Amino acid sequence: MSELSARRWEGSPGVARLGTSSRLSLGVDRIRCDGRGYCAELLPEMIRLDDWGYPIVSSERVPDHLLDHARRAVATCPLLAVRLAEDGRSR
Image (cartoon, rainbow, N blue to C red; front, side):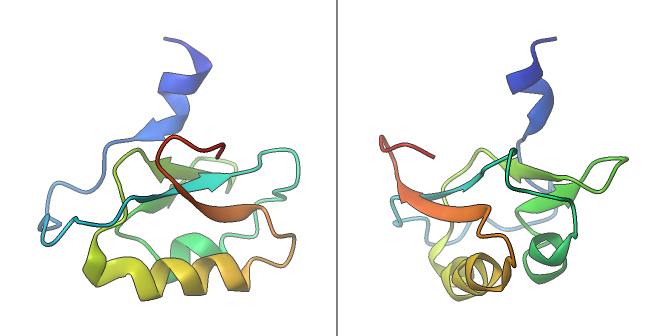
């Protein structure tokens, strides 16, 4: 399994996929991240933590009903490692 596929998560099976008109996706700068886990606490529907506490981000677009939570997760990251980007732009 490649590292990229090992680090992507397809989302929680119990989460409804409502209103995904957003073109925004989450990304994590793995060099900056030090595994504090705030992002996963604020957005567990799209971010889970690996065994060492580092985020594994859903590969899906951020649904409209989670955009505020995603923005809060981005703003709360003390090292600015989490970001929202339009599809097709660098994550």
